[in-house]
Amino acid sequence: MPEIQISAIICTHNRDTYLGAAIDSLLAQDFSGEFEVVVVDNGSSDRTREVVAERESHPRLKYIFEPTIGLSVARNTGAKVASAAILAYLDDDAVASHQWLQVLYAAYQENEQLAIAGGKVTLLWPPDIQPPRWLSPGLAGNLGAYDLGDSIIYIKQPGLTPRGLNYSIRRTFLEEIGGFDPHLGRVGKNLLSNEELQMTEFALKCGWQVAYLPEALVAHNVAPERLNRSWFLNRGWWQGISECYREQLSGKAGISQLSRGGERFVRGLYKAMRYFTDPAERFDNLVYSYGQIGYLNAAIQGLLFAGNSKK
Image 1: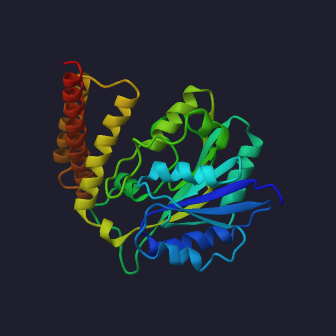
Image 2: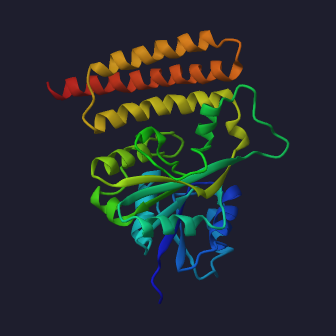
């Protein structure tokens, strides 16, 4: 058997509507070497298994069922099942461009210090639906949009890290840090995040490099149910909780989190009032402020838990 050079992995949970197109975009890759496609079914109860079965005759396709719910758990399972030294993760509601794997693989071949790489993400809007007036470019990022321009960029600020829906990682680095942290990443309907940001922090701290590759293009479907304000407020809430957890995991938890969260909450409200006549900027800052309530809630719970643990 020829050596597999790159493994494309889809972790999926109840997304049968979009999954087929995601798989097909990977099976149709224009890649000069050998690759495989691994689908990790993360406890789905819909038609996920049937969608994969319709394509199971394809020799590149592998299927694994992971009953423990959680994106990071599923990603780690995918890495264990995969054969290659380079792992490329595509979301189950995304579609990869034909050169996606080729662009990613070439970047790792040309740079032995490259630990993480991802590319540009455009949005696929539902038919007859336009972006709402209250959607700012920043909040579009919550839908997956990611564009740092048309040139390769080596990431120095973790906040600019590639999106998880279009993400690749070198296996040796992933093993070096012990895999994806199951304390971060989505679990069922909770929207915990920041696992990619944490990975970039680890990589930079350890002397590895992280790259944005504009030609590694992926399109991400915008689910109609996400186009309401309540979804963005909920996403902001969980973003705040995720940021608090990330600080706790890195040893930065403490009473100072209350002042940081409080200051950011007030700043967001101030900007929302300042841009009151601009619906996009106003809502963007309201979501930011709401996220700080989630952050403060998690920080207070952490302080109470730490206090009780010392008794």
